[in-house]
Length: 172
Image 1 (cartoon, one colour):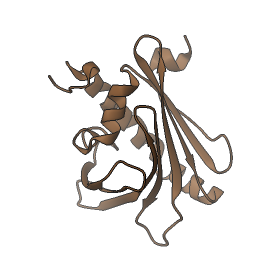
Image 2 (tube, rainbow, N blue to C red):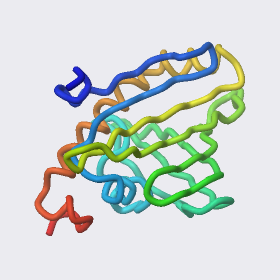
Image 3 (cartoon, one colour):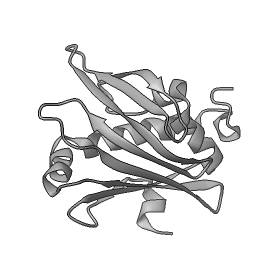
Image 4 (tube, rainbow, N blue to C red):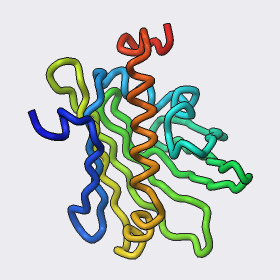
């Protein structure tokens, strides 16, 4: 077993000047993990840093469908994220644009999520985010993105351990 498998840590790398890659093993099959990415009621339970509350305003998971969600901190500050789904292949692939509201508005990145089945009913989750410029990639890395990703995936791990989640029916 690799260190990643044994520890269930998120591995964040920069394969090029324009990319961020994350990888994590999850203790559920891709069919279940996929539902936690496409169902907004499940998504709000895990995505993002611990101290932020998430609200989904739009989440139309299909090619051409749009999404928009907001993270709010305890002080009431809002962080708005939006984009468009480009490819959706249940239960293994989601490709989407990713933008967030800020001035000046950077161009969207392209996020690719691959959910790869591995033995034992687990999933190797791999994301690859591609930016138009190195400074945009570096800005996201410096924003605390890695902490938010780790906290979110830890919450997802906990949800996947709940009774019934491995059958795709969380909390039953």
